[in-house]
Length: 131
Image 1 (tube, one colour):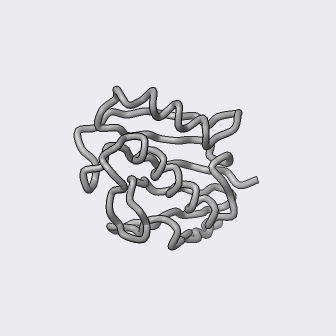
Image 2: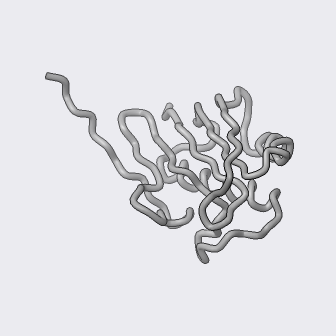
Image 3: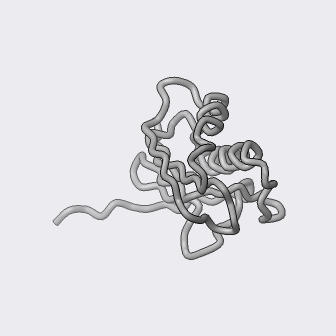
């Protein structure tokens, strides 16, 4: 019989609180699964603005805050999923992402979606591996 891995819930007040039946992140072993983040300002739980650059930056700030709560950083992300309601914003994602990450960059997927929670234009989730 195999031993069950323990799971630790990761939470921080520096990122938006979960708005559903999920945790901000879950750690199992040396892997941390970060739930999707939309561009909510943690203090107000409102979308930062309609500007796509503002929204992308806020999502990276939110992911960074959750990673920090796991004693980690964005540079430990091994897989990043990006959901956009308009794929024409993908070059902007690339430009802004380069300011938050160092090489080697994580594996990544970009997915066009019809809609996101609270009318957001972008959402990202990630998997990070602790050193």
